[in-house]
Every structure is written in C-alpha cells, then in structure tokens.
Image (tube, rainbow, N blue to C red):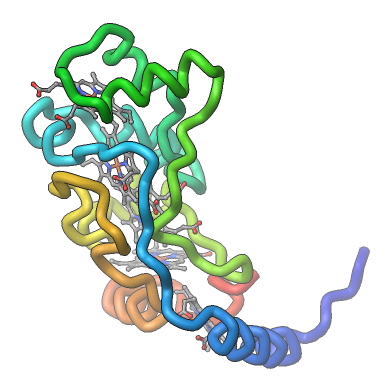
Length: 169
Ligand code: HEC
Ligand code: HEC
Ligand code: HEC
Ligand code: HEC
Ligand code: HEC
C-alpha cells in the first residue's frame, strides 16, 4: 500500500496551493450557459421533480447535469416558438451533449456526497443552493457561495463530523 504523508503535511500543502490558486484566478468571470433554460417554468409551473434532470441527486455522489436526451424527451417537437428551445434539437441532431457549465463546485481535495446530504440527512436543496429552483434564466454566478465555513457551521449545528479528514480525503 502507498504510504500517505501525514494529514498536517497534506493540509499545509493544500493551503499553499489554495493561496496560489487565489493569486492566479483573479475575479471569477460570469457564467454563460449554452441554452437559456428556465428553472421556474419547469419546476414551479410544470412541477417537474429535480431528479428528472439531476438524476444522481438522491442516490449518488454527484447530482449531474441533464443530457440532451432528457430534454429531447419533451422537446422532440416544438412546444413553443423559442429559438432557445430549437437549440436542444440542434445539439441532439448532431449527437452532441449540451455543454452546461458548473456553478457549484468544491475543489478536488474536498469530498462531498449528495446522497448523504439529501437522502440520509434529509436536507433541502435550497440550504446549499439558495433560490436556484426559481430562476427564470440561468444565473451568471452561483446564487449562494460554497465555503468551508458554511459546511462547518451546519456540521456543528447538526452534530455531523468536523474533523479535517472527514471532508479532506
Ligand atoms: C417533462 C417535459 C419537459 C422536459 C424534460 C423539459 N422541458 Fe422544456 N418545456 C416543457 C414544456 C411543456 C414547455 C412549454 C411551457 C410553456 O411555455 O407553456 C417547455 C419550454 C421550454 C423552453 C422554451 C422557453 C421557455 O423557457 O419558456 C425551453 C428553452 C426549454 N423548455 C428548455 C428545456 C431544456 C434545456 C430541457 C432539458 C434540460 C428541458 N426543457 C426539459 C417541457 C419539458
Ligand atoms: C428539466 C430539467 C431540470 C429540472 C427539472 C431541474 N433542473 Fe436544475 N438545472 C438544469 C439545467 C439545464 C441546469 C444548468 C443551466 C442553469 O444553470 O440553469 C441546472 C442547474 C442547476 C444547479 C446548478 C448546478 C451547477 O453547479 O452547475 C442547481 C443547484 C440546480 N439546477 C438545482 C435544481 C433544483 C433544486 C431542482 C428541483 C427543484 C432542479 N434543479 C430541477 C435542469 C433542470
Ligand atoms: C448540504 C449541501 C447541499 C445540498 C443539500 C444539495 N447540494 Fe447540490 N451541491 C452541493 C455542493 C457542495 C456541490 C458541488 C459538488 C462537487 O463539486 O462535487 C453541489 C453540486 C450540485 C450540482 C452540480 C452538478 C453535480 O453533479 O454535482 C447540482 C445539479 C446540484 N448540486 C443539485 C442539487 C439538488 C437538485 C439538490 C436537492 C435535491 C441539492 N443539490 C442538494 C451542495 C448541496
Ligand atoms: C445544512 C447542513 C449541512 C451543510 C451545509 C453541509 N453538511 Fe455535510 N453533513 C450534514 C449532516 C447532517 C451530515 C450527517 C449525515 C449522516 O447522518 O450521515 C453530513 C455529513 C457529511 C459527510 C460525511 C461525514 C462522515 O461521516 O464521513 C461529509 C464528507 C460532508 N458532510 C461534507 C460536507 C461538505 C464538504 C460540505 C460543504 C460543501 C457540507 N458537508 C455541508 C449536514 C450538512
Ligand atoms: C465539513 C467539511 C469540511 C471540514 C470538516 C473541513 N473542511 Fe477544509 N474545506 C472544506 C471546503 C468545502 C473547502 C473549499 C471551500 C473553501 O475554500 O472555503 C475547504 C478548504 C480548505 C482549505 C483550502 C483553502 C482555504 O481557502 O483556506 C484548507 C487549507 C482547509 N480546508 C483546511 C481544513 C482543516 C485544517 C480542517 C480541520 C480543522 C478542515 N479543513 C475541515 C470543507 C471542510
């Protein structure tokens, strides 16, 4: 078995690389999604379940973003005259996935599981994702920031693990 350096060493290396990343990234640029998808319409008016598109959210580590196949199941024929809707059929016809961009992402050194939080702990999406489900167009930045402070404060409140290695694996 490969021997891991002690956790203190790994976390020290981590803080150096985090400081480096901070210096290099500058200000986060606005996110432009390939299609003007409307969460409000699909989840509030049409009352679709989150799991229809984020298929891993209650059973897997990752929630996942929807494949063109999921969208085409309702959009094979036009249901509106929107040019944005037409884009779904173009991606699908070209056998391409829709290149959605991520808004929420933890660094590689952090372990996070949706199943654990959504199914085991029974937490609402909004606790960590803010008002994402009622957005009428894709937000340019995450409506809520992910931070170690936010993870820790809930873990303290609900008496979940707070030792470094439970999240930094
Ligand atoms: C279960 C069926 C269903 C699925 C799955 C679905 N849609 Fe829709 N979508 C609809 C219906 C119905 C409308 C028309 C709503 C209306 O305006 O009456 C619509 C409207 C739209 C529109 C038109 C513009 C607007 O927002 O009103 C776009 C764009 C769109 N959907 C994109 C998507 C994308 C992208 C996906 C996949 C991530 C998707 N839809 C998945 C049913 C669905
Ligand atoms: C019909 C498909 C569909 C349904 C249903 C749906 N979403 Fe989404 N979701 C998307 C698409 C497409 C994106 C990426 C575009 C965007 O940002 O709007 C997305 C992005 C997200 C993101 C940001 C993910 C990231 O980091 O990139 C969150 C959080 C989210 N959805 C939460 C929800 C919640 C909560 C529900 C249920 C209340 C829900 N979604 C239902 C299609 C869907
Ligand atoms: C306890 C906090 C928390 C809860 C509750 C939560 N999420 Fe997340 N979500 C996150 C974090 C953290 C990430 C980034 C994970 C990563 O980078 O691996 C994320 C990422 C996502 C993504 C981006 C794609 C992906 O595969 O990870 C989607 C979509 C998403 N969440 C949807 C949802 C939905 C829908 C719900 C409710 C059913 C939900 N989340 C509940 C914290 C949460
Ligand atoms: C709103 C509350 C809340 C937030 C925010 C939250 N968690 Fe949790 N988390 C929990 C609860 C409750 C559990 C215990 C679930 C169980 O009973 O197994 C848990 C469990 C975990 C576990 C499993 C620990 C173990 O036993 O091995 C990890 C890892 C974890 N969370 C990581 C994160 C990370 C990373 C974040 C921030 C990105 C985060 N959590 C944000 C409530 C939260
Ligand atoms: C509940 C989950 C969780 C626990 C427990 C946790 N962290 Fe974190 N940590 C995160 C998340 C999420 C990030 C990335 C987001 C951020 O930088 O705020 C992070 C980032 C970091 C970073 C990188 C950069 C920075 O911005 O400072 C260091 C270093 C770090 N953690 C050290 C620790 C140490 C030391 C402990 C134990 C005392 C610890 N973490 C416990 C979730 C956790």
